[in-house]
Amino acid sequence: MDPIVGSGKYTYKVHEDWARPPEGMDVRACAVSVDSQDRVYCFNRNAEHPVVIFDRDGNFLSSWGAGMFTFPHAIRIDEQDFVWLTDEYHGQFMKFTTDGQLLQTIGAKGQRSDTGVPEDDFSSAAWKKVTHGGGPFNLPTDIAFAPSGEMFMTDGPHGVWIDRRGRVLIADRENDRVQIFDQDGKLLTVWPTELIGPAFFYVDDDDIVYIPEHNGGMISILTLDGERLARWGDGPVNRSCHGIWVDSHSDLYVVQPGDWGRVRRVVKYERQ
View 1: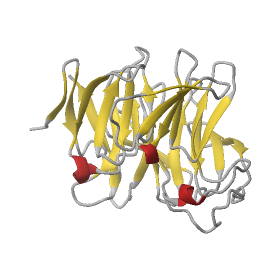
View 2: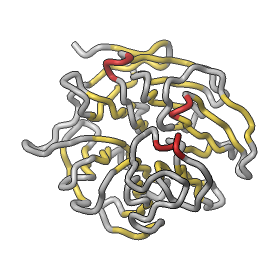
View 3: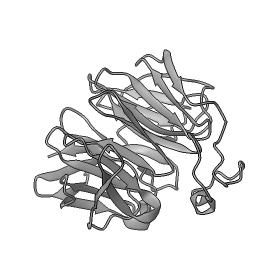
C-alpha cells in the first residue's frame, strides 16, 4: 500500500516508483518542472539524457539535450511553456522550446566571475571563500521572472521566486532561511519558520509555497508569510531533496534520493 503523508488539507499519497523510463536509461534527477499539458520534465545529471519527459502517469514520452550540459541544476517552465535550464558549471541559463530547440543563452560558457573563489572549486562550501563581489555569473543556480519581464537570477543563493505581491523570495540554503526582498533589493523580512536547507520554491495560484528542505530531508508547505501548513520527510534518510513542482491537479513532484542510496529520482505525491 502506498503511504500517506502530510496533514489536513495537504495530505498526499506517495508514489515512489511513479516514473517509468525505458530500460537502460539512467535518470539522475536534479530538478523537475511541469508544462501546461501536465507533462513532467526531469532535468538530469546524465549527459546522454539530460531532459526526460513523462506524462502525469509516469509513462515515458521523450528526451532531449544530449551533450549540451555539464552540471544541470534547475529547470523552470514559464507561462508561455518555454523551458529554462540552469547549468551551474557552464555558468549559463538556456531557454528552450518544449521539444528541445534552443532559443536563447544567457552567460558566457565556463567563464566564472572573479569573487576570490578558486576557479576549480565547485563545492557547496565555495561561498565561504568569497572575498569580494563579481559580475555574473560564478555558480548560477535558478531564475525567476517578474510580470514586467525582468529576470532575477540567483548566483550563490540556491532558489528564487517572484510572488504575486511582487516580492523576491530567496532560498538561502546554506544559512537555513528564506529571505524576502523587494525588487530593488531591500530586505523586507526573513521567515522565522525552521527550514533546514531550503532549496527551491513552487508557489501555486492560491499563494501556497512548497519547499524541499535539502539539508533536512523534509518537504514543507507554507503560506506566503511563512506559516507552516504541513511538513513531512525521513530526515537524514532522504537528505538532498533538490526540486519541487505542482501540476494542475495539485499533485506534487519532488526530487529526492531513493532508499537504495543517494541517487535522486522524482517522487510523485498525489493530493488526497
